[in-house]
Length: 213
Ligand SMILES: [Zn+2]
Image (cartoon, rainbow, N blue to C red; front, top):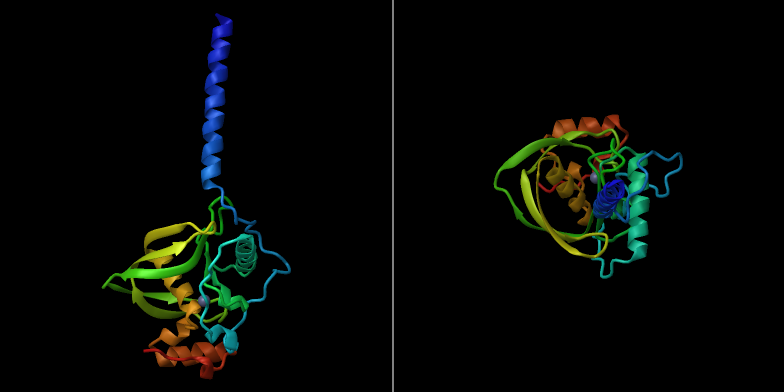
């Protein structure tokens, strides 16, 4: 009798371990890195005035290990700067690659990697939200954008994906996608006076703004 119970316990234990392993496999990201800030981040983030920020990014034709390593280094630099999103042109690489992570507190939440993202739909409803940018540190200003979007992209394994987003994640994706077209959030700020003051206070030149309104 004891033996049977033991066997049953063993069976259920091994089953739950297998389940655990499967769940861990599912949530494991092949690009996740430690979210702890580094003293010397691997990549330098360029700031307003750098011409590279105004260049268009090219599509990535093959998602391989070099792209994943670039994404990891972008994440390390983003976490070190306490940012929630970073686009490859911000570190001088003109490829359509974005890294996003809205949960800097939890080490187990995987980051979102967007390769060749394309917006296929945007809501008619607009939202005003205060944005900031690792390329324009210290400047936080209101920007109006669609409140929800649908997009297609490739993930870090090159798999085609589709997603619907609203709230902060939709905002973040739109901001980062602008970087791929050489657009910065200050180009979209309509309050001219607030823009001039914020740029001046943080040591930036307003001649580097390209208004698109
Ligand atoms: Zn930005």
